[in-house]
Image (cartoon, rainbow, N blue to C red; front, side, top):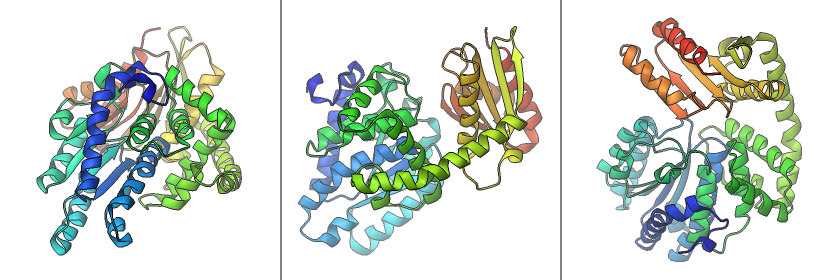
Length: 405
């Protein structure tokens, strides 16, 4: 396949083409042999965009293969995952559910496609568990990756495999996979632009999707509004699978899409504004290296109600975005501190900050602290036992203060 067969022009996608070809072949093979397809995806905007793009491509192919509507129903499922990785608990639920079908109806174990999750070391045990019971696994992700995922999955697509770091999000990547899997689907440019904007991608690839989305009558402000509204709906839905509602927000019915966005936007805007005011009041702001670095910290437990929107990561993101606008020429790092977790956000000019580097440092220095976590280089979280919080904070603060000017 050549570069022009993608929606956009991208050397990253060109280099990933063999892996995309393999993935498409495996999905078509699963449909042909009537193997159920399950999609697991992160419960955020990028994860939903990734999953829905594939869903729009896969479902018509499944319907064409099955003569009975009931068979089609049992051949596809989609499940959001709260954790930013394929959690062992999710894998256990998946095994329990599909083995019930295998035992009762002599069904085949599913092909599980993990979107916007799946590439990290944390995913390994869950992936291995479903494979013990006969499931086939495909991972389409854009987070920093563990090479072992290549060895334990049927297919694995991640921009890090070809030297990219954060040019293409999982949703953008799945749009291209879906478009080649089923060229008849439409509105993919908007979904790709939405995924990239929501995940704060900045690249020439995203700029191309935004340009194409504008031609479909989606301006940048509407895309941003849609991202915020979908983010809220994902929070409200939790683990519930909602097909029609999410599809309408993503433009399946443009009339309903505008009505839903206009309905939700004022509420989401108010919640975000309230949280920003709270953050501004209670954040502790430090200036380091002759005021060239801004370090903000906030106690998550004290600035939001349990179970309220926005969740911890978004709460920190709201403060981070505000500080970046307030101090455009400075490096900005924000810490959201919980009793057993720290969320980190760092501005893109903070090249020498890396959540995963700090994570490994903490694991080596505090092997008893039950440390886990990770994420993108400048956006992620680290979990630990509450008893180790003071030690964790001391090392984290020293690391952040040591960022070069």
